[in-house]
Structure formats: C-alpha cells, structure tokens
Length: 149
Image (cartoon, rainbow, N blue to C red; front, top):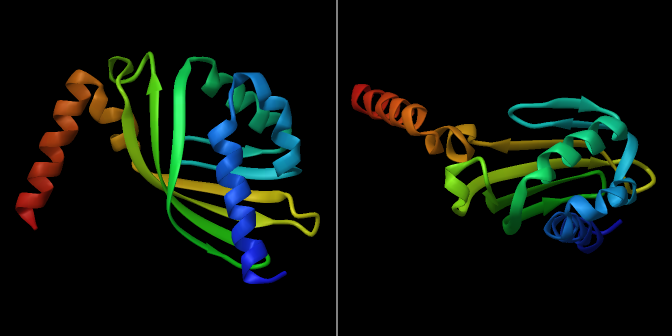
C-alpha cells in the first residue's frame, strides 16, 4: 500500500465519523474488526459489540458532532489523525457548541479494518470545564499550576 492509499483510509475514517449517527450505527462493522480494541480517556472496550453499545449510548443524546482534520500521518498498518471535534449535547454546556482538540491513533488489520483505535483528548476541555462548580475548580487548579512553574 502506498502513502496515498493510507491517507485515503484516514479520509474514509474521518468521513465515517462525520456521517455517524444514532440511525446508522449498524455500519460500524464496515470500519471496525470484530475484535477491535477501543480506548479513550473514559473507556476501554474490547470487541465490536461493546463498541456498538458505547456509540448507541453516546449518540442517543448527541445533537450534533463534526470533525475537522488538522493533520494526518499514515502508513500501511497505522494512522494518526489530529482533529477538532465540535459537538452539541443537551447535558453538557447547556447544549451549546463545544470544540475539543484531539487525536485518533488507529491500526488496520490485514483486511483493512480497524483493529485498534485510541482517542486522546482533554476530558476537561470536553466535559469538566462546562460543569459550573467543577469548571471553576479546574480553572483555579490550572491557574495555580501555571503560577507555580
């Protein structure tokens, strides 16, 4: 596989997520291997069944979600996609649009399906700072840490 095909895999990955919704979760097997390992700052799942349950729960109250790639690196076996995700969720930030910077690392199996997917993002940027009291506390902690360095 050449570099262009590897980059095209990341483009398909990004397109897949930009079109994912509660209505088309059945398409996950098109992208993911049945034994996929998925990790993010909150979850660690093994297998497509767990991943489908996770997305079903996550997308149940998600009003919108869109990813914009900021950089891409890929080869035959793996890829890394840096992104900005903008989403709205009724339970976070009073339903206002929230942007989060993150990165996805994926490894493809011999069939071209994702066997490993790990997302890196700041949980504070995504959720915690949007909870009134918790947001104030985390802001003060960050200010204190910055002052002490």
